[in-house]
Image 1 (cartoon, rainbow, N blue to C red):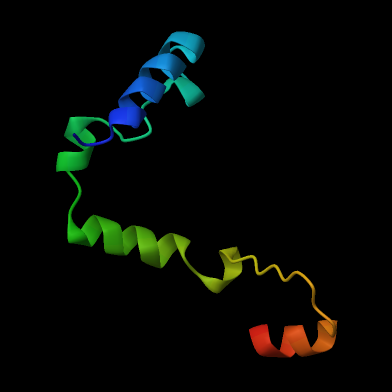
Image 2 (cartoon, helix red, strand yellow; image 1 turned 45 degrees about the horizontal axis):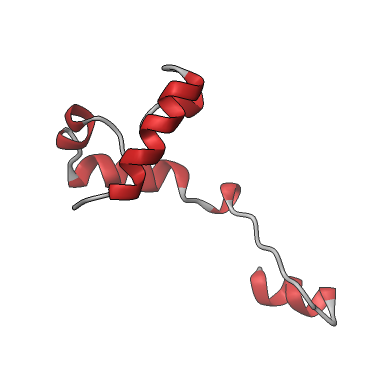
Length: 72
């Protein structure tokens, strides 16, 4: 069963929030999913997964400068 818990959550959120924002399905509609192609996914990756949109967080860092040098 694909996404059994998601179905419950989707229905709960739809009742609570209607068809806006949180009320929309987390898995997407069948029509949208069937329209996905490798081109669509690659295009999304190229446009959205880039250095300008990355946030790097470090916890327990002794030397901020050393951490900066490792990340850069």
